Amino acid sequence: MTILVAAIILWLTPQELVSGEANGNAQAFTTMYTILRTLQAKPDMPLDTSEALITQVIAELQQLNLSTAEDSLYDQSFELAAEDNQKPEEYRNHRQRWLDIKNLIKTGKKEINGLKLQRPTASFARQRASAIINRTLKLAEALKQQLKHGVKEQAVVDELNTAIYGSTKQIDTRGATTFADGGTTACGGNDASNSKAGLSFASDLVCLCSSSAGTSDECTETALNAVKMDNAANAKTAFEELDEKCPQQAKQKASIAALLQAKQLFMTTFRRTPHASASDKSILGGGTKTQCNGGGNGNCVL
Image (cartoon, rainbow, N blue to C red; front, side, top):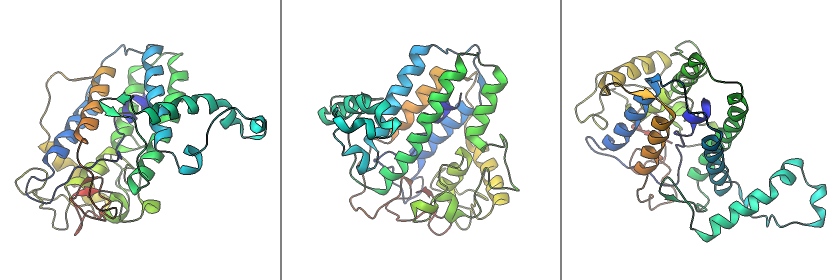
């Protein structure tokens, strides 16, 4: 069920949440822990695996994917041309779909979860969004094939845990599956090419609330005890502290409806005014910071 998890984690939309004061990350933290509790909940079996629902999700991801694509792809006309037979198979297979999607983007009348489908200006955010959406789309298409063979509860649990912790399906403090080596890499630094933001949900949650001393009050209003992102062991301790701070939600099930509602919550949360300066790269939290390292430039994900 990776797509239904990944689809709610379209982190890097062109809008941002800002912070910079006590409890400044409260809205972002509330959104994150609501999603966390959904990912941690027991799957609601049997899942609604209707082809119509999966097809709808894939269609929306395809639209988002083209809207954030690099200029070399998006700027093509996609009109039928005599030389099309010389172009890559992927282009030939998707040309008409891309043309239809581009027309939707240009008209500005299409909305996804209440957000207008449009072409963002070139930015760090668009670059990161494109990479994640493209990866999510490929997972969605693979899932559609898997669903034809049925889905078992443990497989769903495994995918939910993969979203939280990475491929180990549990917190990894020895390798770099859950947490990258150091806050600069884990939280994004100031270079998209080296960023490991989005490595796991646990990692991004810690980045949002971490600082050099580990006592930030931006997520919870009152100072935390040991929320640092300087190494994997401390990041594990930090995640466990934040997990305890997240309110429990009684009788919650990880249904497809709940996951899609979580995606809607995240998308709605990001309906904020973008930073005025092109150099303000912070995506989640962090006010107008241009880098996020979990330390002196903490409380954000780049």
